[in-house]
Image (cartoon, rainbow, N blue to C red; front, side, top):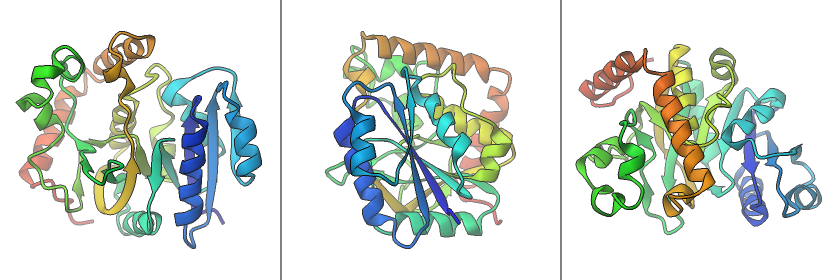
Length: 278
């Protein structure tokens, strides 16, 4: 019986995918895992390479790049009682899968959990976050990022004032690695294809919360994430424009539930972000 279905999407990042799949093979332990690669129309031979080098991986080859919502193709065929979104530039570490499974087994009220993310140099990568403010895309991209990236609004969004060394509730966790139950997926539905890139991860967490589940951050499990932030590096590009469109659509989509979601976040903060008793 499959315990965890790990869904990876890729577009012209063959070597990243190779390393990612290698980390799963190395650190899956005794967990019954199926890996699903959804290829977003790569032109670098990713599909053939993975089929040869990682024959146990199930491959869904798309003709075009569908962005983050391509994960839907993986979710539709996933068999595990738990599912994981893992970015192609992310690597599992020893014990992470076992810890996430044990945590979710103990917390049926939690629909999705994110592990501690670290950069390739080992530094902490803030991954549990507050509701994204309307000005966020401008504050975190050139030219304003030069002065405002380390400002109060961004730091508050990234929850830099909250200790990152304990398990806690979160408004959302970023999509580099999201571990969720099949039941939560069924209740939340599919990823919204109208949000091609970030914040599709925020939208997914909010959909799971709307279905009645909690979101958690679990630092006892670690995943290494390179985190390219390509749209910040190339603020004038098609991908950057698609991200801005997706962010604007996300804010419009949740406009009627914004007050409720913000109130829930304030309630989490009053509890010190501690998860209520299960």
